[in-house]
Length: 110
Length: 115
Image 1 (cartoon, chains in turn red, yellow):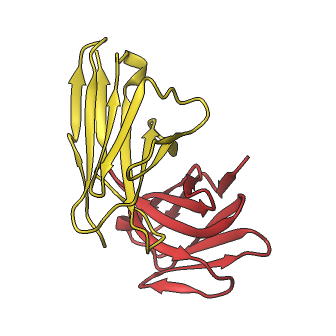
Image 2 (cartoon, each protein chain N blue to C red; image 1 turned 60 degrees about the horizontal axis):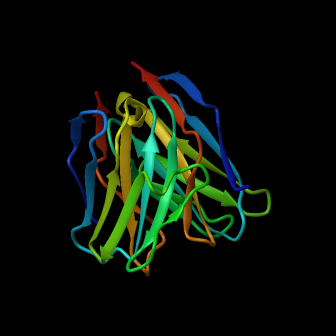
């Protein structure tokens, strides 16, 4: 059975801290891994990773994929209260399914 | 990114009635659309995947006769919750992708409350 597991499920830090969110997966015919941020309603797209070892960066957010060890991390540096959200990891697999992990609820306290 | 519009954003219906939710891709052709259900404080649970012009592929445990999915055009997919019951109350989200890009973009979601 395909599965995507995120950790931690919940994280509370202070503004300015750096956080690392984890996503491991076991899927058939892996195609790509995606990170989304969900605040109030629909998830918004952050990154798509298809190749191992190539870091994707957008401002204070960065992400990297390890296809050998089957995991990805999402880093957020100098966190701000606006980074508080649920971060979702999803994997596209060969049958064109997009399977989500449970999400990490990140809370940034001022 | 691409725009996906979902309508309505919230709906209240009586038990036993049917509700239709629309998902439209506004600026791209959505060859594949996904329907998810999300319970409070939980992640998105994939209900079904639909390709334009084909029957939807339902995930295990999802009743295809209860959750009717139609993807008749490259810009529109609909989810109809038939004979709704209070336990169907949930947040339903669609996402769509085209044939070229792997990333999928989400609609705004529909909060369904069955009373």
